[in-house]
Image 1: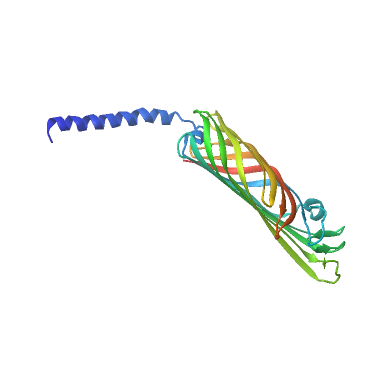
Image 2: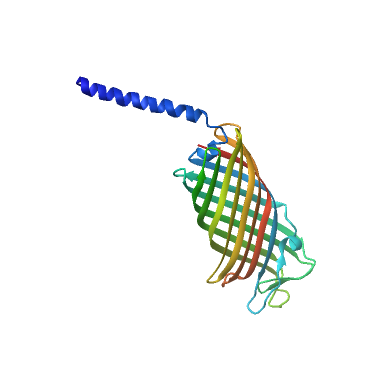
Length: 283
């Protein structure tokens, strides 16, 4: 290696070391909460303390059935599973991919104090009927950060929201008015794919504390679907280390869909609201 080449290598090495040293103080000054704005990956997993609101009707072959208020008719249910998972990937400070999964499954059994009509089945007063509702919500969205500062961020999103809902009733009932039909079980699945638009904001208001909010809404009528939905969440996270924190949020989700399909001919109004306790990680 000649002296000229050696000098060039020395300059490159010294330049690299200076770059690392220059970047190190900036990283060291990044607070735990600011990591939720600056880091490429943010994940959270939480469990709900939540209340449900489910109203639906399923029309039979020749009838228009009244709505069933599942909470009023069958109770709120103690056998429930509710959780929400979210992930954010900052490809660049401005361009993000966000994903979410939510599941809410509730089973309840009650002796009816009125007749209940579901499809072509009538569950009569005095019958013991089991009702199960299961909702799975998937979302994948692209985000663009209009504002991306060390302590706060504002982003808009566009993506796809897919809700898969299953409603199941089981008990002694009559079919098309024929008494003595025995135990009748009817399960109806309703997949609802909808576009998603929304806004998300985050603010690191203290070294270890982060406040964030999300609002999404859409209304569409296409083919066999006529639906609208709103999803809103606001919460605070305490980052007890640089990479991990715990959060508490309030989440409210509502959707209303009218459907004319062979597997589900009727309408559905579903909502949930409550507190979400979550564990957050960022890297």
